[in-house]
Length: 239
View 1 (cartoon, one colour):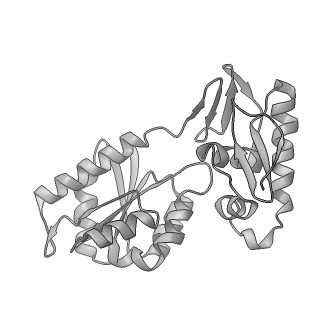
View 2: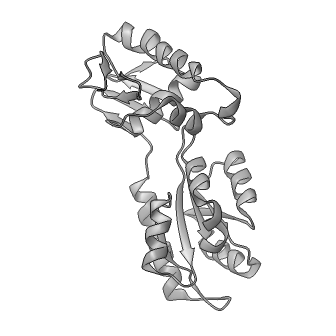
View 3: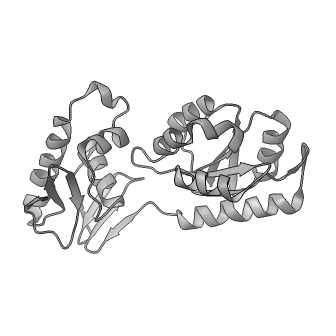
């Protein structure tokens, strides 16, 4: 069963969507504010959030980023009462995964628009139906916090696992220390960038070295890049 969270300042609207979505396939809950939604996301195993544009718009960038932290990514669908192309582009550029018209005529649920929202929810959950990262002989399962190499389980837990997972999700991209801190640590301002170097070293000592593989390249002055299986293991000097 997938767990959904509906965020709207209108009690009749959020309750109508929750009631309609709750059933055998979904368990749906409601939140009135982004703060409530963020707390629910941290406390529960949420798979997808549907949020009213009027509520999420001022903080969508930071909120969307928070949904991608840790080992489980949460999809964000924004709904708008008066959708426009400009709003659509803005929402997607700032981190939303999808955007559609709010399924209401006034406060009354519009069944045809609701079916469209439901179809988008189903499509998004299908697209993100598994968090497993397949990198050939190396498989990372964020939900179970497990890594397999040639079908053999590898022991790597905690922050090193989360760092490896984040880099693997963004394979071939160079991720800076600051980006890794923001994506993984709850209070990045309270730790130093050196914790990233420690995590990378643990990945190399506990996994790469024993297996005789390389998973992460250091790009000097810029950050790190997941590049398995085509990884030289060298430090790259970015000119």
